[in-house]
Length: 237
Length: 237
DNA sequence: GTGCCGTGGATCCTATAGGAAACACGGCCA
DNA sequence: TGGCCGTGTTTCCTATAGGATCCACGGCAC
Image (cartoon, rainbow over all chains, first blue to last red; front, side, top):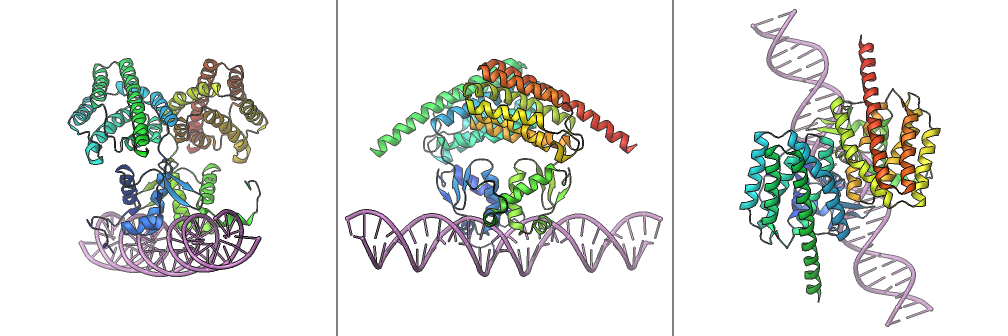
């Protein structure tokens, strides 16, 4: 029963669908699954040593997050990468939600919260930023943690749900694939500026700092996107 | 493609999970399923004459929309109704997203779009607003259609996803249960004001009109909520 | 009378089997 | 040579079966 998968730890005897969900998510991240790749239900089930039922349930949940798409009777595929337009739209959406979160979080800031943000920034500083998945995973994790902490501290679970629905971190992570973090120093500085505003209890400044950070992220993402495009063109040449 | 043909035998043979999804959604709406009610997988499957597998997949998708909650090994239950605090949070979230949508939609407005909005408002006027599900279902459908049309016309699919993630229409619908629409005339007037601004191509006015409408919705919802609370108290007395 | 425990039923969770549709490939005809 | 069609395989989709767990109820000891 529990054979076939090296590393064991698979048979938790409860909620296999959850384990499968995390496993597919991990594969989306580390590049084992690229954009457009089909995700065979039976095949994935065989690989993980489980039956198709939990795989189906996990994919149903993933589909609602727009990370995979389901064709009528042709199975699931990895959602395509963001186009230039979509990238700008995503940044507009973040620009709408995240500064709002920063402003609200400022009113609920406490010591533990600020401490956690500080740690996230420290982790950003310590993280490597090479071109490989294992390199920048730590960086990405700390970045996501920073933004999500603020979204949680805002205290409005509907806005938090909206933030989650963007899936911004996932998309940005996939954009990093093969590129690595480009300009970590600027990003870290912007994060620090947000934290400083929160420490001072200056809600307006926190909002503005967050907005400025997102704009910076957008500029850098556009730059990376163009570089990636040029790389692709030069490779194909 | 072949939409709108009831009784077609072809439907039975494709994506039962989708049919089950709609059926459960309908039951959530019309009060057959109330807050806190357990949703038995096997039982639902027997009632609908299908196997548990599609039911499981439908519930997995519903769970990601926060309309049902899943206890570890104890099955699914209908999500609890909104508390007063949560209602205010929901309205804050709508206040963040929907005026933004109205402003963007103003830039993309075309004749078909404005026509569809006009029709939605007409449907609002013609709809009954009694206390029973069948009475106000038409009203609710038109209201939801109006807001979603604007969200779609805004043209940013991430913000659209955020709007969907709120599930605002579903929650508000469930609040109506047993109450009916309270002050339809004000709501219709506010809708008309939004449409007028969009017709003029006045983006700022559209944004403000939408914000004013949401505020109106909030006030009325609070009023209804208090009334419902009083009714509950007097009934329990 | 109260608290604990064992049994029965219902439910969840996973695995397996089988029918149906879609894609790939090779053969046939113009 | 190019287009069309039939066959085989893969995959999806649903149904059914069985093991494991949790809740409810009744009996028994204190």
